[in-house]
Length: 170
Image 1 (tube, rainbow, N blue to C red):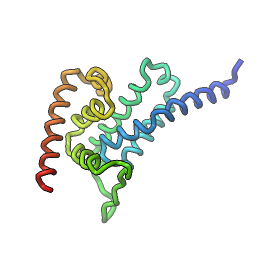
Image 2: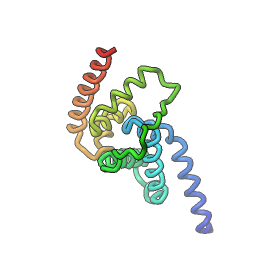
Image 3: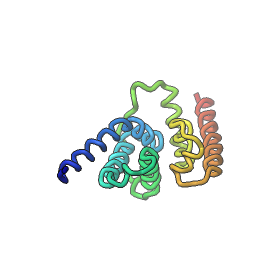
Image 4: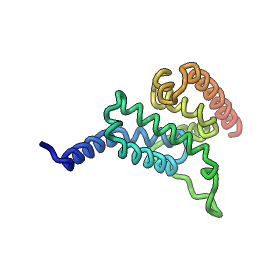
């Protein structure tokens, strides 16, 4: 018979294995949606804390990856809506970190992606960076497949306009 501590250690190990294999992808998703590595890391940490607290229920989900992706997207979109998230608490802006392994084109694309409205950006990231189907994207965002299709079309149009404007300005 296992003790309560033994079951807890087993659940902790299972949680660690689950997170370890997906952390890089979740971090990238958070960055692509919010456009800031530090903010993305903070939001991901909050999601992982919530996931850990509810791991007994979460691990029984039919698709735990989809559950975490949904939690992450909702937290990112909710955080974006909060008024305080726009407040800067310093006299000067801090330097923004970028991933040094990414080519210049990727940096340009991410900068353009920041100018796409949040809901459209979330659809674009899930559909084209995470390679989710329309149905999977709709489930992750809690909307219809028609909404995913229309938001993807609008988001791509906005992204093209931003990229064309940037290219014309060079």
